[in-house]
Amino acid sequence: MRHRSLEIIRDEHSSLAAMLQSMRMMVDRGPQDNPKNFFDVLRAMLFYIDEFPERLHHPKETELLFPRVKKASPHTADAIARLDRDHQYTEIAVRDIQHLLLGWELMGESRKQVFLHEFTKYVSQYLEHMRLEESVILPEAERTLTEADWKELDAEFEKNCDPLTGKYKPDPVYEQLFTRIVMNAPAPIGLGGG
Image 1 (cartoon, rainbow, N blue to C red):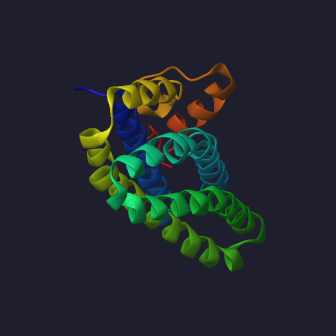
Image 2 (cartoon, rainbow, N blue to C red):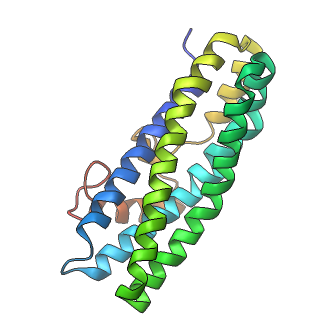
Image 3 (cartoon, rainbow, N blue to C red):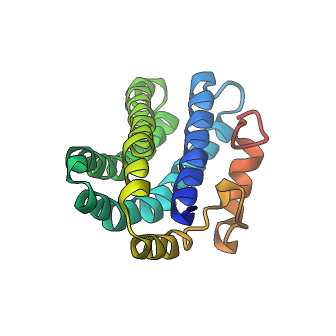
């Protein structure tokens, strides 16, 4: 049976992985001859991560999905505890990285290495986090959760409507943010060269 919440989680993971990949490509290239665009787009991308995955996606996993999986499959408790710790880390880290990026932009090269170190750690941990969810938790959820569980999960995750999945029109409030990202970020998220 197809569960809409699993599809949404995987779509959101895919768009976030693409965002992280685009950011990594931009950071690897550096500001080059257009530092204003470089810093503006990276800030917009970090803001997106803070607004969508951190405030919509993660709370629903932590509060709705993980407790159900843990109850149905107690052997997943250690993995779920790690994923919950990851959620706490990424929620704080995305804001710290925004600050470090601003430090690099305003204070120059003396702040670049600290940003690069924390950004690289953040991206690696985030990608590993999604891999663990998709290889352990989601298959276990599919195997053990009840139809009543899926009904509630599907109803909650369907409210997310993340426009970067390509399946939803952006809320008008976020239209300018998504336009900025898509027009200026490199593929796979955007059309620009970064």
